[in-house]
Length: 196
Image 1: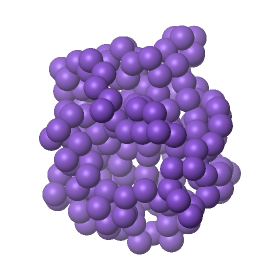
Image 2 (image 1 turned 180 degrees about the horizontal axis):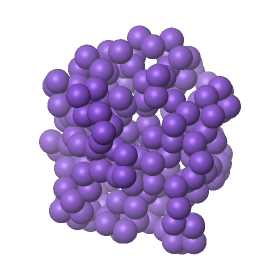
Image 3 (image 1 turned 30 degrees about the vertical axis):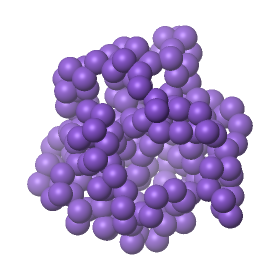
Image 4 (image 1 turned 120 degrees about the vertical axis):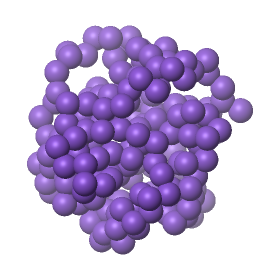
């Protein structure tokens, strides 16, 4: 299985961004995750994989096993809201090949504010500066235009498609490597407008 030489202290040092708190998901995040799952705006972009109801527990298990996984994301200025989304890095497979994968899922009330891009940039910084990864990939459905624009704004490029889930449409494969990341300007990209 995929086992890059991750520096776990690098993961532990990253606890947030200017506007966001990033932490491993906890059992207390189940309510926020259920809200995300039943949100019709989010459901239309589900690309398959593990049953949605199992994902939070899978992410928690990834943290326990790997010391890395998608974060629960909350607002620095409104922590009492709890998790407004989930996302970050995880070890996985893309087209049968081991990969370091980036993903994000936010409650639709928080779309269009740049949170996914801000969290993604933190994850990419962790991947390339802290963990010394060679590349990061992302898989998503072709109809998720706003997420595609977010990935492109943070430097990932469409490299193909992957049919990982039998009977379902192929997912688009986005990627960025260490050299491409090093060439990116160090600024926060504009937010993707809602409905873009």
